[in-house]
Length: 518
Image (cartoon, rainbow, N blue to C red; front, side, top):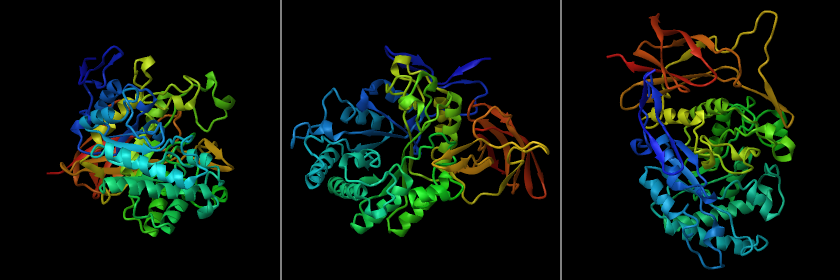
């Protein structure tokens, strides 16, 4: 088959691979970050951990991402008490890296955390807060005009809670009396004030990676008069061992664990977002914006060993399952209308080499493996090209049905979709076809996205009749997000409806494009 190369990216002295090698049937024109005016698509970078930004940023740009997230550790800024300096060439993740990223059309989120605990022990929390405010002010001045969003601390549930050593559970079951969470709220307020004093237009995001914690955090912010300082809430909604549509929240057993319903009883991710926005409105936040600052799936090798002898919350997913699940997750972020969705992380880290789950979240492999792409890299390239601005969720579209909309049981044998028991709560995949509409505001083109929300498996794909409750569109063509190839769509009209016959719906998204009739 004739091969068409749309872009060739050469990493000098390290690797050479084509980031846009596609077949002649490729239905998608790939775009770089510069060619995209806006989107939610983003990825976490770790230049602070010796990633090579001159080698990695061109790959991120060619993938079409619009956002990146990185830290600017306090411990590197203030090595001597009272003396604050931006890191030197050994730590190029600050000014030079950010200048390069902005020039490539990327928006930057910077996390403000990682204190020099020897200089600022948390036992003297008032001094700790003053030091944090000075650090936030200094970094905001140094990077003003370059950074879009400032994040107040990373995963306080895990990092801040353990360091302050003042008690309270990981899920803040004690509610607004949770001591560590009250202190995190105080730190958020002083940090936000410091940044906004330098840059009043700065966007401040804050919150916990754990969904129920954010509900109590908002109550504490309101109590302390800090609700106006935070522009958006953040979340790290890792599914761990679960498919992306469901999370380990919701249901009677987990409500008892958390003391709060952070999700509906169906455990859905979209219900978590809805409930958070309801809470944000209730406490009087000026917006209900949500930033997803980390999410992802790891591809580590469980058979080579792992922390605690394999006792880990993470599943060891195949490369193909990672790609399928990331595609499904990004569509859920689009449907949930988050401001940015930051995948963790762009390339594999060196943690534990092959054994540790956190070393294998990347969409490409590490430098020692020549930045070899995993299937997820090509999937996100296509998604960035197809679902960035001006394409948005088509809220007032038309009804869509699929028949069948799930696997059918035989008369004698019932198939049970694999489930997970999490802290005593059984959680199953949605086991249904997900159907969402998007629209290009410039062209009027509509994109129908379909996937079977089951665990990635060896079962044959569904073949369904898809009915659209309208006859206003024509020119139906299909796109497979995993291959980038187009496929034929058999469309007809009857009784004021459009019928798409024998549509193959796999366990990853396929897109059916259509244009308004002239």
